[in-house]
Amino acid sequence: MERTFAIIKPDAFKAGYAGRIIARIYAEGFKIVGLKKLYMSKVEAEGFYYVHKARPFFGELTDFMSSGPCVVMVLEAEGAIKKWRDLMGATNPAEAAEGTLRKEFGSSIGENATHGSDAPETAAFEIPYFFSGLELL
Ligand code: IDP
Image (tube, rainbow, N blue to C red; front, side, top):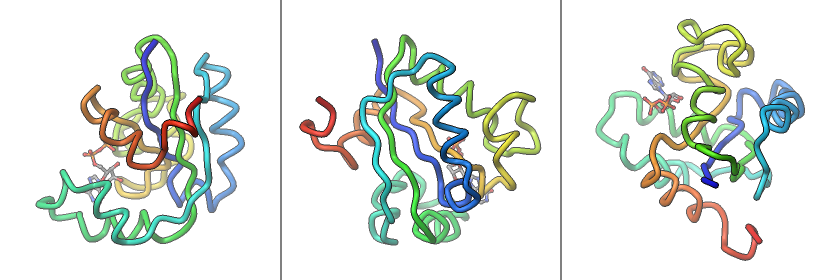
């Protein structure tokens, strides 16, 4: 079993899509090991996306992620990291395949509804960034 870190981003939460996204997570066979709503500060968003700090959209991205509440989750499944990335679809909703979450719920390359770890090392940083061990029992 593998764990990955996922976010229902502020655009999707504000639009009321959290319930539908969570229903889809269960339908696809993930176990939700941790889940909470939080309202990230700008500094917390900058820390989370530290690897992107040199990218031109870093300011826009961290403003967006701290613009409203989101839902952070730890998902467990066999091959959870790839399985969740496949379910999310391409970064740009316009290029995401039919049936993916970003196609259905995303509105732009920045406001694309969901986040998912892209590798085991990333998940190993992202999960403890937001969850303590006790919250994942
Ligand atoms: P990913 O989320 O599919 O792994 P990354 O390239 O790692 O995509 O980018 C992280 C996040 O940064 C994206 O999910 C999106 O919210 C935002 N982002 C990516 N490219 C752009 C852009 O060109 N303009 C604005 N925001 C972007």
